[in-house]
Length: 384
Image (cartoon, rainbow, N blue to C red; front, side, top):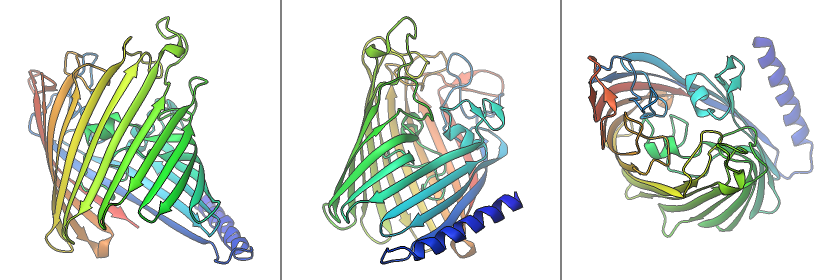
């Protein structure tokens, strides 16, 4: 590992020198950043399986995206991100390690540790060409433009991720272009293989788009969308031509004062036919959700935030179900503290979360079921 790091450093140093010898008016800049996180989550149900996921009719459910273990210490994700920036081109190599890397790369079943594992994952790997000061083109694998939250623990205010995040795309592979009308608005359009998969499972391509505008200083609005065919050929005797997937998303944030911040994420989606080999509804079926965020910085080292979310999957279009496997809806409230230490390199996030489903979802220590779950824990994040 040490030899590999030294080799990488030498190559990057060489590239940096070459960049400075180019005709660019500003020398290229290389940066290296990342983070790691660890956590403990306690569950007041004291589930027999030691899981926060609940049940879904076939066994383990999906009530949480990442912090899945109850009453255990865990390691989340380790990120190593290298970025090169110049007047003409940007390049990003974003590598992730650990259990959350495996979960965030769930569309790929064979990783370095064998079938079912991708614990060493390419999170992002893309090149951005700056054609003009207003027009850019990006090619490669990039994080999704959809949604309020991201996979990176230091960026989100809450540690546990929303159901909107859990049921939306994580990443795409393809080509996108972005045109900035001004410093307060731009339009992005692109073509991608599919949703959350290194390889396309059919010959169709997905279309993505985002329109950003800022009506006033401190207020940002993002209108997002993706339309794609996610079907594998001849699943359950149905041609991939009869399948469709679409998701439309609104994300908006407003920094009301230097201390007080609010945000909103609302999304609605439809699905028909197979979704990447897992089957799906024969007719177009919808789901939707909305999450409201707020946080207040009491000092430069302590803040408190809350998230309230409603997610409706009663028609069963997505994987969020009750213990019997039927479509369900859920109301969730999450209260998270943010404590900054070690000159900003360490973030401590104590967190209380309550999930209430429309039917039984979670198990207790005696094996009986209940529709609600309350967890309390702490995450520690180191960033550099």
